[in-house]
Image: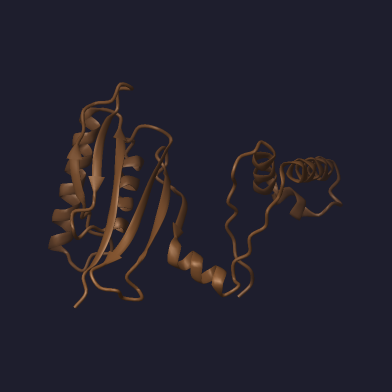
Length: 202
């Protein structure tokens, strides 16, 4: 029989020592409720956690890591719950993890990453290496590289189209929904890395 593991190590920044204590109490209460009502729709907050000394910026970090039977989904849900209760400090938080196996199983290895908005608790981006690799291998994933100059030109053209759309009702309503794409092109023109997520028709 093979044993499967998830491994990670990250610091969660909290606003204060009191906020960090509230987060740990939230974790304990959630786990107690989970044990009483299995099967539960939420994940068990199962991971190692150690209190770190307060940082020079005044935040009170919590070091979270795998403890042999960790649950990455539960960790992400925990951080989202803390963020929604305004316990976290900073703007964004990320965790990167790996999957491992005690025997060479075909499904035993992988990894991923997740970025969370600490002001809202929303997941900004997530990545599963196995899903990404399978998608590229099957031809469902396409990578398009846009240089800085091309992005700047496309951004300017779309801005002109949107300005004209505001003045002329005859122009396509679809032009008015392009704001996210315009912002993405602006970021590329500023030499920032951008990920656009979407899918084609089924």
